[in-house]
Length: 256
Image (cartoon, rainbow, N blue to C red; front, top):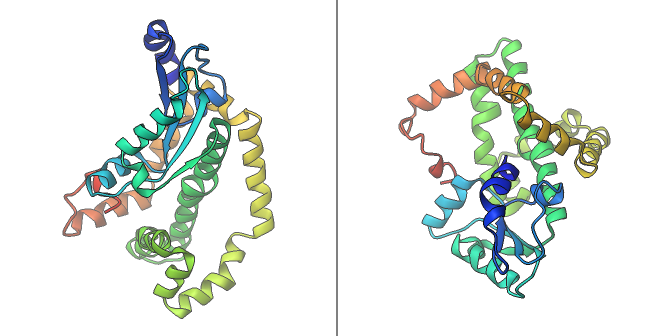
């Protein structure tokens, strides 16, 4: 865990006037790291995976960043944070000021309910329903998984309206009549609020910290192994291998 690295390799060497930079607020928010009073503490949090930060920087663009200052011992913490963000290309896309507290809670919430937990389970359920109904797994993969990136790219470019403009009217009509059937708004929001509550009161953080302190991350690794054996992963790997760019496994190009 980063907190262990901090205690062993960083804290003993900190001097007054140094700066501690964070890419995520977790360790400050949940007090896994408690910096001394004489150092700057700032956050430069790109809103995307590390691979994407690098690939968009190289392409001349950038990933939007959040900036926060927890301690400003030198009076220059904010200036240093903005310089750091400019250095990784974030200022090309945009910088928004926040706090360690808010970045941590909203980031964890987005990951768990929508971006990772929500999207992966939604794709998996759609894939399984089609396969169980007798459709070819390859069809199910294309319709429920492969096209996800194409749809999200359109939303990133011009919002949901741009995506709806680009798809067929049939698909857009289906969005309106079937989306709420699959994800009933009030029920889903109630469950999301429960997830948010676990994040706010430290329940999730406690589980994750305990998981990392246990021998071998038993639950985490078992879930990862289960996912690797899922039919959607096996079929997807085969389909991607047969595409003309199938040899490209460089994650830096995933957003290109």
